[in-house]
Length: 503
Image (cartoon, rainbow, N blue to C red; front, top):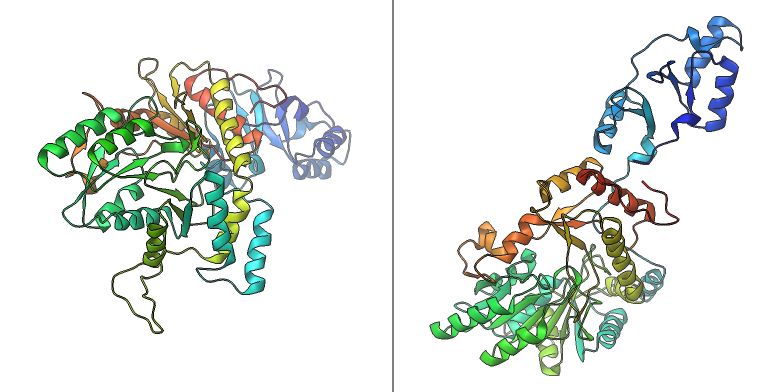
């Protein structure tokens, strides 16, 4: 916790009222700490206490000895910020002395300093977005089409090296349209990474198809080529090859696409690359999201860049991209009236949100660099915690570190990921488990699953994994506060970064 220097605000009963008033004015805390001869805390002293004492004694030189003994509210040093804030709310106070087991004050908490939650990944807006949005308002282009949409699609495609892109309402919508383009329907199967968010798999069910889930490997935490190979052999023997394989790039890192693509090519199965979490990442120098037959990005509020809500579908085939736009625009036939020969969707992105995306795209490189720096600070500062195992980055990968993720090795500690998450929550710091694998979700409990080996890697990563606050706009002091809180959970001292005040 960030605390005020105790020695600056500590007084004894021998101090005259006038000196106490002068000190109170100098430190500006609104409160002093009265301690006994043994250094133990007795009570807090406010401006009101001093004025009442002055009225009673009528002498500015009167000592504080005449102050009544009261039972001031304190908090034990082992308690967290959330407990401290609850005490402040309960007693309607804004300052709270922190005491050790000998009741010596070791700090003073202020509401304004502790009433601040550190979130996992918050939107990070810049300066350019407003100009594009204002342009949309000035020109009255507020519908799900317009110059910002066209430019956002073109600029993103150029940035990642894709031939075509279409801006949609979400990454989920992009996956859904991709499956529709591939002809996925009732009775079909689609293979999908198990260690992912439900949005990767839900569109399979939208199409009436059956998901088959594939485990991760330890190399990248993404789809295991070994598991995919077994699943494809099983499917070929059963005469039920999947219509597609959805490969998810987890937490800003690409899967081993060459190995996965070789397997899919062997069986003639297309890959939909779910790069919702990995815009800005690279695989062997190539942009994540451009490596499958189709790729998708997400611009949800917690992603590395955001349009509030939105997604993008990347396709090299011009005929397929035209059909994607058709399906995403309610599948309206070319006619002077509203004519529909098949079912479509209201999936297009608005011109206003595309304006936000254009501004965000200009700072993508900065956002990636900032998140990678957050990850490296965690890893260096907590190098003295052998139980922490950080998400690997293979030599062929350039990860954005969208979320800083690690696992807790039970061989080095009895603490669990749940213990760490609870410990951080007590300090008003948001942390989350690694994604719960799809094959463990009740809604998909009936689906087939292929593990990496004898034991499931995804199950272990979920059981041991933690995602830490990773925002590109997280202040350095907040990052150090998270690091200090993690270190306290494990009972170690973090490595101090030069020029940064320890939390």
